Image 1 (cartoon, rainbow, N blue to C red):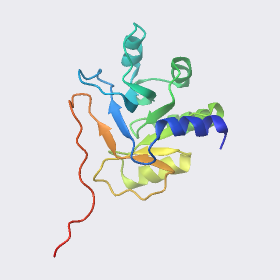
Image 2 (image 1 turned 90 degrees about the vertical axis):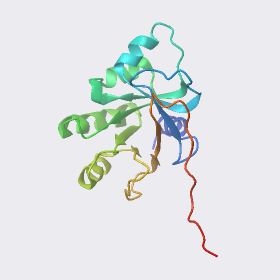
Image 3 (image 1 turned 30 degrees about the vertical axis):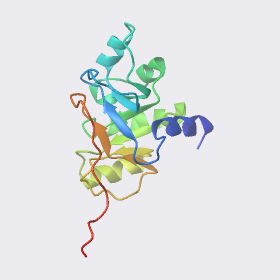
Length: 166
């Protein structure tokens, strides 16, 4: 793995596999905190060009809205996010371009069936975005289960662990 790709992955996953991500595709929440990563779309990039304050240190471009690698490179985002809504030939092309340009290729597996998760892995996805309740095998080097909706004012992490009976 190249050093450029390792640096981008370290920015996107500063806390390992449990990084908080803010979903800004529909706009920036009024009470947005400076979380490590924000998911953005082309509409957000257009708004940000007008000196809008960015809500996170690292940005990931959602490719489902018609973006391409030229948009990712030009805007300086740290990685791209793709879901199975895109055709598989398009996803394979994006994965290939990510390898060429040293960009993290992140699979949005929140609504993906198990065969799609396996296919993303076969394409060379570097990380996966999963829902907290999903039981996806730990086949990706990185993953996250904390995606904060753009209309959520405050995020409260769920307690982890198993209650003990005495």
